[in-house]
Image (cartoon, rainbow, N blue to C red; front, side, top):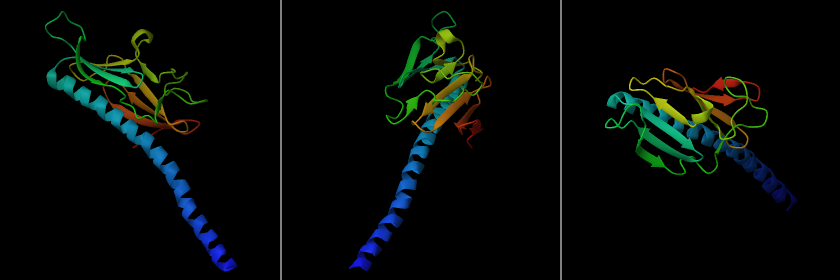
Length: 173
């Protein structure tokens, strides 16, 4: 009887180890998939701006995302037409913002809402020109309480994903 109980105990430990590792793997990949989803949205809107030869903007309002387009029948420049509205775009298990001790990609502190594009008065809106360039380069920071990722957009419209290692940012391929 003791041998059977010992065998069940050993099998229980062997089953628990991968499960514990697996939950961390799932959490890390959940954050990465959310970052890839944001990157795809940004790249898609850049492509739409170039295809339609008009300015487009992505506005981040908490968990909601709104897409704007320039209304060509009104005085330019404007971003008056709402193309799409995505309420609760971000997963419930993902937070916008930084983690304790993390610095922004370009140095300094991360805004509490995690969105840092252009000037301080309108830093929640990423704007693409008709040529696919970005009027206000910046970043979106997301975390799951343990891991931190940054989706960075440069002036040429290139989008890159970075992971915070605890000391520095490393690009995710």
